[in-house]
Length: 365
Image (cartoon, rainbow, N blue to C red; front, side, top):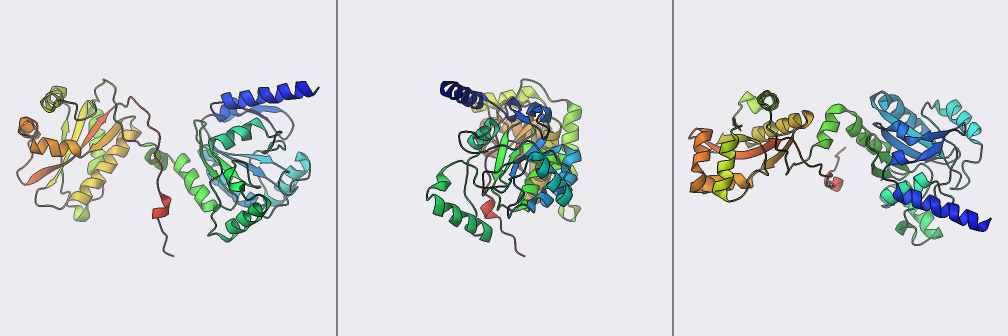
């Protein structure tokens, strides 16, 4: 019997390690029926281990508010009650569900009770923890400091383990099944909501999905599509409506090839088209030109195109006499200068997002 149990645990470990996304897992709902998480493909998920007798239990109200606000936009909360932390979820799943509906009017799905740590941890949680380990409590927050002190007294090295630390730990999962972020129970729900909004709001989602593309398909961009991108650009805000920029769109691929040949290498990552933005030679207009470019890059993203904003090639082009023919073709007025170039085309890569330093932001209240 012991050998059988060991074999089963080993098999579960192999299955967990081989999982590539959340859709590879099956869980039991509150009626004990198997549910494949592939059911939630295309949805943004917040996965939470909960308890009904915890100091964080009022977060059920916040979770329901999130669900009510974003569920129609492709957002789901998956609630997994767990009794491993202070024995604070002691009832049956039926009792837990009754408590949550009676006290917090929850409508998001609850699943059967599970364990999230230890040898009996559900494979889903073993995988989640492997994707996003524990990164610490915010000890400047009173509750975070309290949790850190309590857990450190129990285990001085608790923070070096990926284990779930307490009830109401949350994992944010993208619509393609990848774990994006882990929140500890002391993290502010406003921060959780901001991240969810970025994933489900189509405008914000488009902004979050844009990447600098440095590899393009050998496919021209349709003229009408380029017109749409540029129209989005010239409708960007402009101080006093001065519109101090001029734009040149290069569709002539031979011209682009000739520049690359003159330079001895590709200047534009193989992009089939270029958008060249110019500002007054005497200075000024840079802010408006930046807004113009951001609008165009976001419009391109929304249309399935990729872009990369280039400054280095500009410096090369204006300083290299062999490339004067390119600047001549742009027909830039004498009182203007080439400011930056957007490489644009159909992307042939999907770069991952690079981390951003939120600590550089401070709110003055």
